[in-house]
Amino acid sequence: MPETPENAATTGARIHLENLTKLYPGNPVPAVDNVDMEIKAGEIVILVGPSGCGKSTTLKMINRLIEPTSGRIRIGDEDVTDMDPVKLRRTIGYAIQASGLFPHMTVAQNIALVPKMIGWSKSKIKNRVEEMLDLVGLDPGEFHGRYPRQLSGGQQQRVGVARALAADPPVLLMDEPFGAVDPITRDHLQDELIRLQHELHKTICFVTHDFDEAIKLGDRIAVLRERSHIAQFDTPEAILTNPADDFVSGFVGAGAALKRLNLTRVRDVGVVDFPTARIDDPLESIFELMRSGSHNELLLLDRNGRPYKWLRRGDLSRAKGSLARAGAPVQHSVSRDATLRDALEAVLTDSAGRVAVTGRRGEYIGVVDMETLMNNVQELLEADHLEAVEHQHQLQEQRARQTHLAQEGVDGADGGQGVKA
Image 1: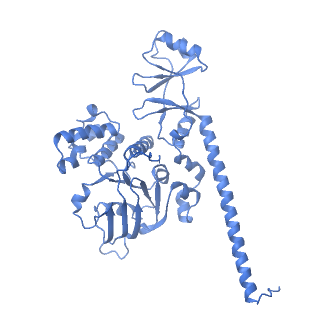
Image 2: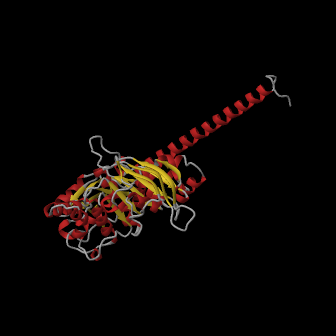
Image 3: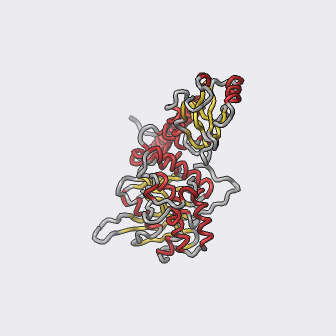
């Protein structure tokens, strides 16, 4: 996750679960057993574990959709265990798989739901709806009056996140929110959540069964066994490089070095400039730019400054007064918050070995190429190798100390005379 800027205010609240337990009637074994966990204000914590381990139950006990059998829940300085659950839920954002939007309500009505319940004025609600749509990258004028059935799956999830954030809650709970969309949309939604968190600094507890998603999104990851027993609760880097046991190693799986590509953002590597022109520029100026530049290619931007086409010199000779049929459409782009893994996948599908990098509104920022990405991959592999060597040295030193102590114990028991073979 991107680091919080020093001057940015954290608007999230600390969550502390104390001995949280859920025992269903008629079942002798708890679904969640005695969970202790502290989530810091302003961080994203991911709960990941096998199906049926109790991660969603744990999440739903935080906003009391499921009532705990025992234990305490503290949000900030307040014990909310005995608070009116309806009142509590109005102070906590909640986003689920398949968005959970009400089909008979428009986008605006869905987003306005909680602000309306807690008594905001009509003008404040109207402004907040527009602000939220803008925040999640949807044009208020275009989407305000639409119904959920008129949206794509990705758009529905964006509205679901906007609704969860509408009343400006300090805590956002997310239960596999991107699990029902296709992989490409899922990547975009993950990037969007990273960008939003970089701006808002909420406290987010996020459930997933996908360890790659956990690595990409989490400041810390809680790997859960059955009954939500915590196998390891640490940063993605620590879990990838030093899994606590074989159970955690099973979640990490093969290719830990490549999984670390999900820990580095495009914003952290060398994004370079590239010759660009706009689609409404005169053809003569585009010709001149191509002739005078060192590149035999340029990136054509649309009227909103977004990547549109890659143009080569040969394309211009065939333009015949129009760029309509010239060049190759831009198939892939990545945001500044995309991971190196996302960028590498995009670059590998491009014959020229580069991908355009875009900002929040899809506007062109620069280009990242194969050479830059491979240099970063090499650095990660070298760092992994050095860490593995250091870990091996530490194990050897530990064994040597244990052998020495054992030998001292034998010598002491023998009255200092040693043991003869």
